[in-house]
Length: 264
Image (cartoon, rainbow, N blue to C red; front, side, top):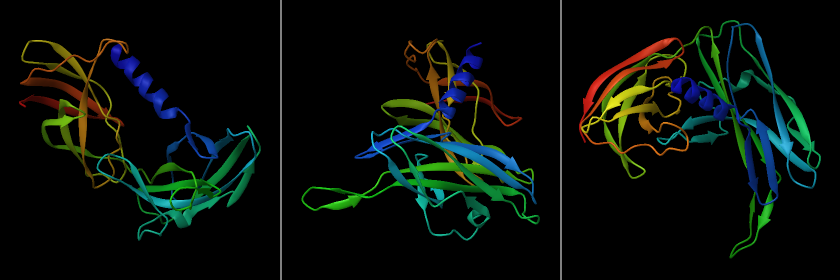
């Protein structure tokens, strides 16, 4: 039951719209990311809803970008075309749009997947940018707000293949937490889900959930296991090491088995 509640909560959080407010830029997009699949030789189409939360009409510029993840899992955008980019397949409805005060706009995009496209993952971002504004200070600088809408499109049956490279304990946000080094040997991204049963040195039973960071193809990423309270209002219990972990985490329709004792 608790696993079902956690998965439901994770799904709700992942589907929440993304809102950014900076100076006069106050926009919301829903959904903030797309994770889907397409066959070679077909055209994938979808829609993102853009809301202007400000009391005045707003003009936005939209364009594509390539991106990568930093060690903390934050996206770093690059408008230069990467060598293996699928952005030439992408079509956007318009380069500029205007959304009225407190208004909404459904914005369309499509990906024309070539018939000879190899199995793999088409990843790109749609950058939504507001008009530049001048920020006064010691030096007046033009700045503009920006939202990156992330798209993952698995082509030709692409899938992740996750492997545990190492396990250990790391200091994260003031706590010593179990961490898995996960390598993705597949050709699409994935995220670990589920709960792992833990028993600490004082005999306490603690459930652990993995962080929701995506693991990209060819990447090795540190995935922290966070201790869970009995309910959202209950703080996670302290951990006395050594800690025994047993169970399995899931991704797609596969499982990652764990049976280990970790020392601080």
